[in-house]
Length: 75
Image (tube, rainbow, N blue to C red; front, side, top):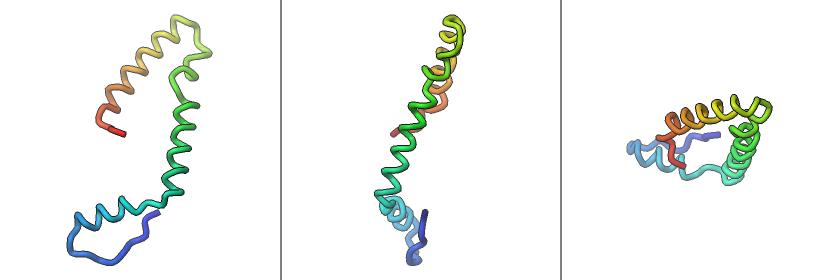
């Protein structure tokens, strides 16, 4: 949660300051939850109940779309 600080005339300094002061506990819990969601909703777990031929096609299509739509998000 963001708590507003003192007003500043310099907008870029205020934006950099708020991003660098995230609560470490919040950051850790976010990373942990994200890793859990990656495991639960991985392509392998989604296509596991499908027949092999269909699983291959769905896996290829999902991989393609995740590559295309997430190419700009750099972790």
